[in-house]
Image 1 (tube, rainbow, N blue to C red):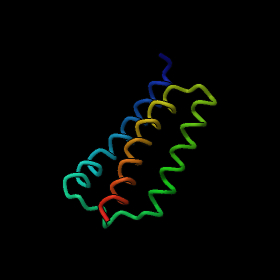
Image 2: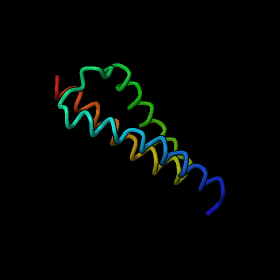
Image 3: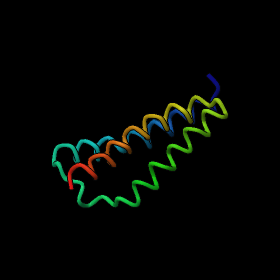
Image 4: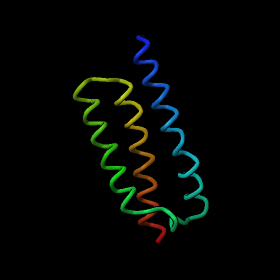
Length: 84
């Protein structure tokens, strides 16, 4: 594996894992009151576009990390709508 790919996977993993505590907290508390709906719609859309971009480039670091981030962000978005 090339250094650039390893660097990308590491950076992506760290920024992706940062969402896990928010998902867990929102799930446990059943509250997403303090989360901005507009911000998460924009963020989730941006992550989806990064995922498409990574697929276009066939870049494993971009695809892998943004696929996981998309799932986590979509979960938070779902909780925001579900736990009104």
